[in-house]
Image (cartoon, rainbow over all chains, first blue to last red; front, side, top):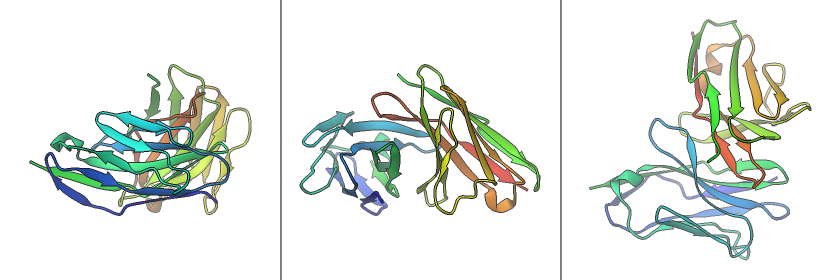
Length: 110
Length: 114
């Protein structure tokens, strides 16, 4: 079956540091890929998405590129802020079914 | 943007009772909704896929008689936890898939079974 593997956390960074959270996947067919974010005490929100190979999703300074050759969708941000502290989930949808990674907790310290 | 309303946000019940959680897509039609359980270490476990007008598809290990799912319309799916026990206490989350294949999540429901 489909699976999503993302970098284990927790990840702790200083403000303005560069962020990478790795995500790789296995899926049959051609999945759509997503990053969701869950801020403390809140539900999951869509951060960005990519629906086909080489697509780049971007939002709020975060970026991720759909790499079919490496089956990856790594999340990056050039300069993190304290307000980016949250749990980040990599996910795919394929053949009508959703699969999530285990989540990576990011803490950004001032 | 798309909004999914999940209700109730918190519920406390006695062991042996049943609890119903509703998930509504407010401004779009969702032929498919998903139900998840989020455990304390944060991982999301897909419980079932709910398709409008048909029976839900349950993931392996999820008891369909325990977790009843009904998707009666294009905007409403319900999860009923029957004869709840303390081990059913958890955070339950629904999501609805729109036509662009994006999932919009409800805010979640915290169930505590005493």
